[in-house]
Length: 477
Image (tube, rainbow, N blue to C red; front, top):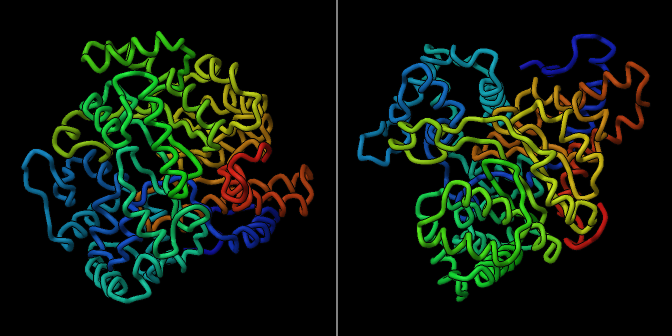
């Protein structure tokens, strides 16, 4: 890969981008939101074969091949209905390489090829005729001590990595990390509180999980007061394990401020199996306001990831379960949806809400003006279907004029793919360097201020916004 990848073609801007990128490239990685399995680092076992490391868990890869008629089972994705799935890593690898042309021009190809080069030192182009050569080269690297998870963590220059767990998780992996000096408050690996499975009444098994929450905490979760108390107890446990934020993946951004009696009635209907879809939406909306109140009390940053129709591909869900690439973005409204929460707490500097979207048309129309008008609100970067170089450029162009740089969070990789973390951050740093270089070339920003900004975006902002460098109850950024 050329060293100037993603930099402007204009010679002046390209030179400036190189200079700015050099400052960002040396910064440690702050990964404040993602889905890496903490067991990878807690156990520190050698990674499996290249296919199970790089292909099987990568939904960007498997969904593209599914769109061309190759089922995920041929790529080793486990099934939930008893259908067999391919287990031979080399066969899985060859299947992907045979279809590699499908990824021309996609960020998936960029990430994977950069991972080959920068993590494994493999520069041979990926072709059917080179498939086995590259597979063997990566497999040989994975057998070396330098490619164990903790060694790679150090090599990647990761300062903080946040994983994401349910309130029902016993956090045993994080306890092991803390015992080894890797986890806990101020640790290198921390958890994030993700309560969706005990909040979303539409999620099958919700009532049973609410009962489990009560058993785990000793609270009576058949009452709304007891349900809130149980959630507070689990938040305390997560904070003890190093958490600085919570995460909420709701279908919409709607918030609602109900009375205690109204919330109680919704909870009881849900537990009795009598809640309607409107009840479930109202309960999720009210719980976001409740979680904002809790965040003011305990300091957790509230992340909101709305706008995905979960399990849209019903065949994929029935065959392989949740979170295997079957979700689709939909239009999301924020101005009216967030009003109840912002009316109550939007100007309280103790609260920090980071909002993400899959609907990029809302960046300039709604989210940038909202973030530019409320002390509590910050914009998360493009994520999931939008974490591509083009969408990252559009994001900076859309939001900077209204919200500036400092009402955004810096980059968040949101990945399950451990080995792609440094590559994704590198792409974001290159895109930001290119954007800032244009501002400098157009005499819109002095070079010294652009240099300070690129370091802020790469390192200081995510560290500050996600409260990774100060007292979680500190009132100002």
